[in-house]
Image 1 (cartoon, rainbow, N blue to C red):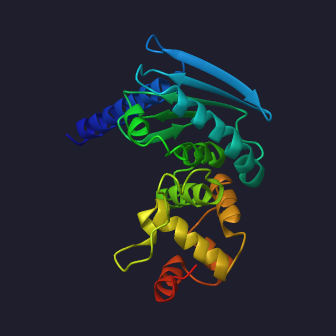
Image 2 (image 1 turned 90 degrees about the vertical axis):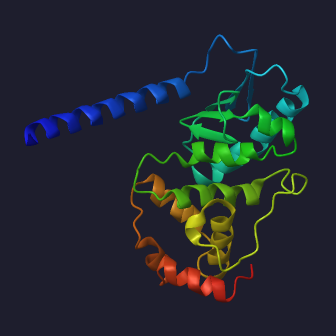
Image 3 (image 1 turned 45 degrees about the horizontal axis):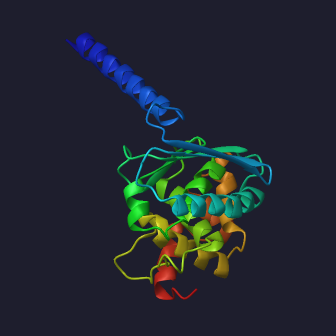
Length: 237
C-alpha cells in the first residue's frame, strides 16, 4: 500500500510539473492567430514588441504605454540590472483576467483594465521591473518582489499622480508582508532611516540567490519585524 501511495505521489508531481511547463510555454508564446496588430520599436538599445489581441483597445493608450516603456525601462535597467533582457513583449491579452503579469520577458495586460483606467500606464513601469529583477529563486518572498516593483514605480512612474496612484498612509492593520504599495512605503522608510541603498542591495541579493532573513539585520542591525515595529511607531517618510 505504501508503495502505491509513493507511486501515486510521484505521478501527481510529474503531472503538476507538466501542467506548469505547458502554462509557461503558453505564456511565452508571442505569436497567435488572435493577434490583431504587432508593433516593434527599437530605441535606446532596447526592442519592444507590442502585440494587441483586442479590437476595442485604444491606439492612444497603446502609444502611451510604449512611450512609458522607453522612458522607464532603460532607467530601471541602469539602476537595478544592466544585464536585463534587451527584448521585451507587451501583449494586450483578453484571456488574462488580472490587471497585468510578467514571466520571463513577456508582459500580459488585461485590456479591460486599461480601457477603464487609461491613465494607469505605470502598470508598465511595475511589470517591466519584474523583467529587470529576473529572480529565478523560490526563496525570495513574494512581498519582497512586489514591494521592490512598486518602490520603483513610485520612483520612476511617469503618470502616477494623474492615475491617482499613491503610496498608502501607514495604519495598524498593515504588515510588511502585504506587498505592493504597503511594502514599497516601508522600504522608503528603511532607506531614509538606515541604508539609502537598501533596495538596490535587496534586489541584488534576491537575483544572486544570496537573500536570507538575516539580510535585514546585516544591513540595518534590526530584524525585519523589529524594523516594522519601529516604522509603526514613527512612519513618517
